Picture (cartoon, helix red, strand yellow):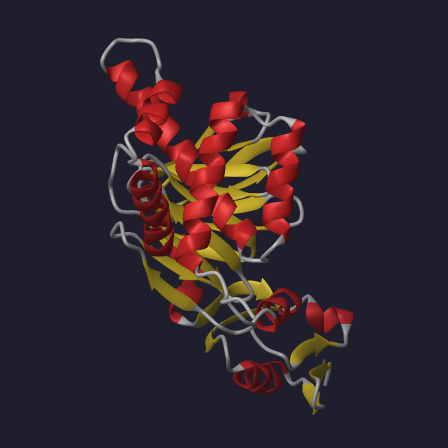
Length: 319
């Protein structure tokens, strides 16, 4: 029985394949040979993709270097010189290793469970505070800090770096900052943006002509369906709405229905207001996100309501 091919040998063969494809072109015969090689070991596909990414990286570097020198791009010639000089393998290993190291150090994927709030320091000096049931990817690239908010809500304290804008993508909504602090909450319609420091710009993809500026203490609802609208909430009000960053829910005149919905974001046992009149009552109070029972007891005492507790819910009725 033959010995299993080493990962190093597979990587070297993948690099050689990339060089052959660049030199000879992807004709049918060569593609068939490549497909046969790839099918021989399930590790080869990954090695080939890594080598291809590193090769493309070398090409971009060559083009940029040539442009800086004022000449025509010579990416292919330069790469073929590398092959001829026997330096291809070393160059690709270095490039691939650099790519993987950059991704490992500067790309962060965060997913929070229900009730979980996470503070995540970033390698550029920024800070992300990620709310309950949120999925976010943060990619700190050399010329751009790109954030993808797939669901949920996050607040960002952005380290100043004028050469690398900090851009959050939430569906079709984009929010751009350089050095500031703001939150983005993704909704079915678009996103809600709240600024706690500095100024950000927001727009929808395809509607860059309607870029809006949102300043400290302001909130904006940004959706593709309507022009963005900025509301001057005030710094204290924005901080109150973002009290979740410290694990709190601060109510200041929300209805019981709205308060219940907020608690339900963080807890498996849901609060259900069974009476419509009671649901429209407003409330003021300060509670921990993970302590819905304290809210239920307070409502029972102050509004004369009655409560039934089941394993799944707190059912609140008018007294």
